[in-house]
Image (cartoon, rainbow over all chains, first blue to last red; front, top):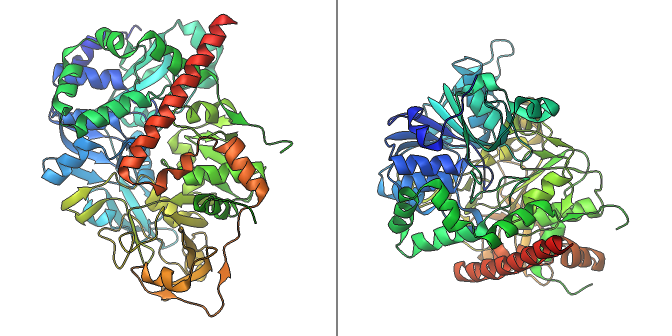
Amino acid sequence: MNKVIALEELSSFVAPGDSLGIGGAWMASHPMAAVRQLMRDGIGDLHVIGSLSSIDVDQLIGAGLVRELTFSMVSLEAYGLAPHFRKAVQDGTLIINEISGVAINVGLDAGARNLPYLPMRDIGASQLPEVTPDAFAEITCPFTGERLLAIRAIVPDVAIIHVLRADAAGNCQVEGPMACDPELARAAGRVVVTCEEIVETEVIARNPATTHIPGFLVDAVIEAPFGAHPTTHIPRYGFDAWAVMEYADACADGLADTHIAQLASESEAAYRERVLSADKRAVLTTIARNPKTLETQGT
Amino acid sequence: MSDYRIEELMVCRIASEVDDSGVTVLGSFTPLAYAAYMLAKLTHAQDAYLVGFNAIGMPAVELNLTGVEAAIYSGALAYWSFGPTTQTVHLGKRGLVECVSPAQIDGSGAFNLACIGDYNNPKVRMPGGAGSPEVMQHYERILVYFGRHDKRTLVDKVDFRTGQRYPLEASARLERGLLAGAIRVITPLAVLVKDDDAKPFRIETLNPGVDVTEVIENTGFELEVPTNIGTTAEPTPEQIKLLRDRIDPYATIKFDFLDAQSRKDMLRDLLQGEWDRALATSRENVGA
């Protein structure tokens, strides 16, 4: 079955008002090309669900496309607080459902299993269940009588996920950080993957151990080279910290709107042309290919 | 005694908690903790299982800003996703050590990564705690570190409880199916420890040259002050050499100890160096 579509056709799968799960974690493997396409198409009123979010969610909020956010963290890490997330929460313009990071995985797992919730042990005296009561409930184990925490199932209408390679049927391989992307793909109603390259099925079959999202979960496949940029996609390219710092600086200098407007107004090919100079490509691929590991023996 | 910086002493104190009896996970950007785990892996804990970005059994890596993930993945023994990692390590009682570096902690052990001010109308909205509520409750050894020890950070009461390990008494924890273990707070002044909800944090050790009064005056909550307080161990020359020559040659561990502007300057300098080195390497590879 051929599920390949162009990036420009993403809007056939993500509608305004949808709940949208976004893959990746920290500064790794966020589906940034798809995020940029949502900005180009202005698909708004979204309920975004992230796990460990960063520039992906911050840009969507900056573009005014997010009504509600389910999250455990939104951060630019060393590069500062996520400016649009921070401002939107401080201004009261964003509905937030703050959930602890492991509980999000449990909620996705429940969604994938067609269950209304799954239990886990408690999270101590955290106030998160108090401020996000729709996500957590205290229950009693029917077998042991122990007090446990029920986590409501998380079932996004649609998920966008970036992977290393996929075939036309949507069998996806990953050889680096994959966050909770497989769990997200199992839980979501529809799944759109972007990938560094589309390959023949026989390429997938040669190394099935790296297929973490099988094609039967996937609805559409989009080829998007550097599709996680400026976040990483190991083993292809390292972290474009220079670009993230530029984003943070632009926001700090009051140029956020210009920055977001530029992303929304240019094609993905034009984005790559503008942002990824020959030197930048050389640097990012070199970082990914020359790992600095330390020998533990003989020290 | 060797010549060392305070952050190096803190790295060594954290490293001493890491061994091969459980799994140690690299959390969100915490360079001091990363350096400590690598140091343990290169010295007393060569068999320690480290996990970074769901790379299970990762090797020790050099610390930098752009290449750590590639290094972590290049030598790891298994690639998982968050599902199996968190079910097995966080919720499955295999979590040994994790460090948290929140904006605030109070005398109950509650910490805040959410907001300054009221949760529903915050003065400053911060990133959120990621998996720290679960880590704090479920791991064996909880280390909370700060680049500064003052009453803005060690507060009377946190503005929001992102997480709080509760209960703390070993017997109550075991009864609830949780791992027992204390919370330690590691700062430029001292190491504080708490293992009983009914008692305040106790000064476990003072860092060399620090007077007990300085710790009390800069702490926003009550402290138990034992009559005899030991001194935090100083780094050995071998530890310092490993840190400076191999693990953290660009001194990323200074990050937590700098103000906002100095951090920015430091990031710019580090990134310029990483750009230059990567570009030089790519040209060598083309020439080869």
